[in-house]
Length: 193
View 1 (cartoon, helix red, strand yellow):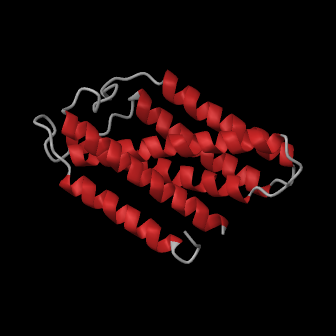
View 2 (view 1 turned 135 degrees about the vertical axis):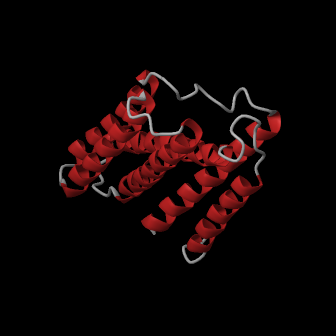
């Protein structure tokens, strides 16, 4: 896709994602709140994918002589946008599903901490002129995201609500997640053009 068509592709993929969420099946327990769970889960998974991309690009850049970090910074920006959006969507979902935001929930604390760490690392990295430091910071960011999420306990947050759902709900979740991943990849391509 050429760079002139990328914005249209991004908008189209986001509209398809929203349409899929709107058309997605509800479950008996959460009802229409499940639609926000689809959004939150798709954004979290897309964020994890993007942070993993930050780590991989950072590792590769350790062994390159180039000081062009435009791809790394584009992926990092999108990871932050998706992650912060996932955190906001998760808070709204918590309010609707549980009657409030459970600030002691380890998963919520981890997502907030990851938001703060990733924003800080982005500003430090983009201001740095030291390629090795930029690479190490990106690698460290990716590792810290995964360590924090894997080690975060749960109070109210289910382990994986979609794994125990009906097959139609699981299918919609996978497709919605893929559509948001496509939107993130197209946006990264557009930013780097």
